[in-house]
Length: 278
Image (cartoon, rainbow, N blue to C red; front, side):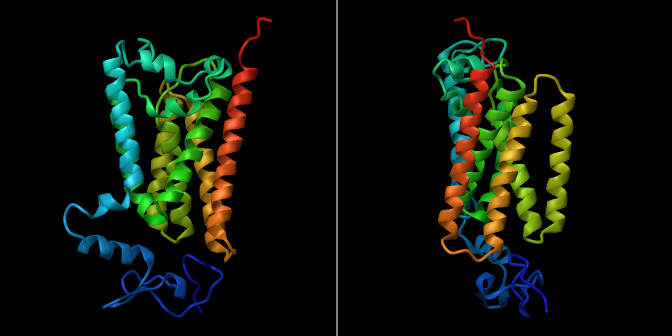
């Protein structure tokens, strides 16, 4: 007997009427054309949603994050100075990530740096990637999970940047985006979406090549974000695969713990990489 593609420990003789994947009772959605899996049922719902209230409403956190980053970039422009790292724009200096600033009583840089960008091209590329990954991942896992994974990715990215490039001023959403790439890949594989996982995997490899071949890119930020998002996705996959009581609570605590570890690690790294003149 086949097993559910989302819950491998559950046997079932029912398949999705659209894609043919085996589904257990918890994953079945009754439709006029038979039982469908969550993904196919979600696609059907989006098609029938009136114009203007479809896909966008399924990814509110994605659009909110993009809006915040765009607003922050506009604030950079109005605050004066250049938005580039070399130009030393006011908000870049005050919110960008570097060990000395964090160790000097400004831990908020661990977060604020992820919403600032060094130029319009930097912003545009990151927001395009965030949009593509967000509208793919957020509707599939839910907004709360998406926010948790993104937060863990951003904080882990800052941790990584402070380990490998502690004295380099760093800004950008790339750590969070790399984490979303890792999460999308692992969750797609877990749910049996092998073709999608292969496409995302190629995208990950391509971006890693760019990371190591182009100068002025935060290798630590990208790798840290990738690891943070991957660990968060493994937690989500593990609890989804096992029927655990209070799974949502455990998942929330686990994601918060990942975030806390990343923050503590970033603070320790910043302190240890800042010269002491006492």
